[in-house]
Image (tube, rainbow, N blue to C red):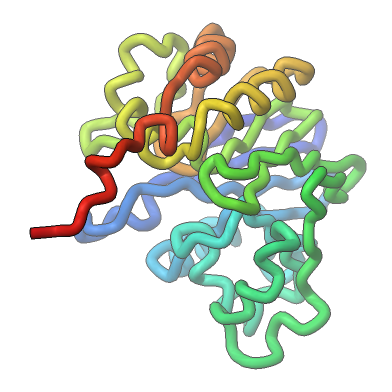
Length: 256
């Protein structure tokens, strides 16, 4: 059952959290359905593990065949491995993804299924139509993917942040928003130190998002952050050493 992140004046944001936990082998991931004025888009629809339940869950809120867009933060399998099923039978929607992945994502699909249906997002981002308004595709390159975007909804003031902000742990309550970052850091720190590329890009990101009114940061893995946790997270990652900051000669040795 999806979690309602926002619902006001015909604008609805839903988060699906439990669609790929069966068996416990796959990483937990969130999928998102946004609806405005009878127009719907999905963000990061996930892999084949999530497809069936996401499709069924969506039908209670919006006809999947009428989606106007599939929006992907990057091209990892947990983001769009189900793309062939969406593009083949489910919808005529276009796929929005970084322009550097335009010629890679067809590998997820049968030949010809993506022809004329991929919109390459330029490096500086763009506005993606949604009903009476739009979403902002915000540059988030190397956080963690080379071509990576986050999506900001000006109506709900939610930042859909992809892998940045992710939290992992079997005992984690992903349905419950986090309001204070301190107790949440053990679920976040290891992931961010390994998967984010460098502190330099985190500083650029923090400088950018401080210009936006953000009520909630919702990552692709784990729990949303709201209230004081939003600014606490921005301040935390701004000073975080990660990725290549931590690499030394010891990490590049020939195995015995």
